[in-house]
Image (cartoon, rainbow, N blue to C red; front, side):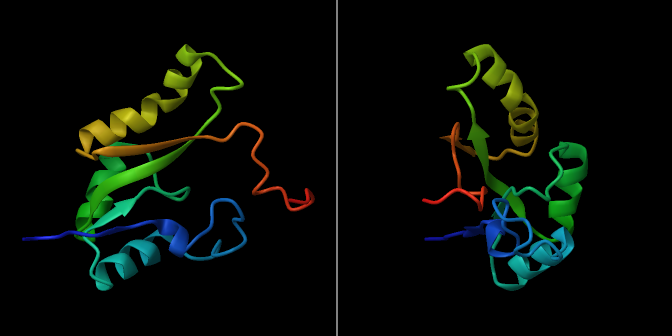
Length: 118
């Protein structure tokens, strides 16, 4: 049996608190992902969502696009608007044969707001 593993870039840069790993480049993240033995990656906030840019970048590092997180706001907009919000990601994922979009409803989320107690 062959197993392939992908990694989330939040291990290098935190999208909720960009100052955590903010200085870490996308190139460093991709290079170190491959050096650690991963063959795939989830998208992150530093990743371009243009398949013509992202595809060759991942290929350079011997990685495939495995998945990506989408912070949804369906509680605040229509279904049609939410599909429009997802369109670029879905187009890129289809072009790069990425099988998974991780959709999470994040309306009202406070994780990146440091002044709000939890």
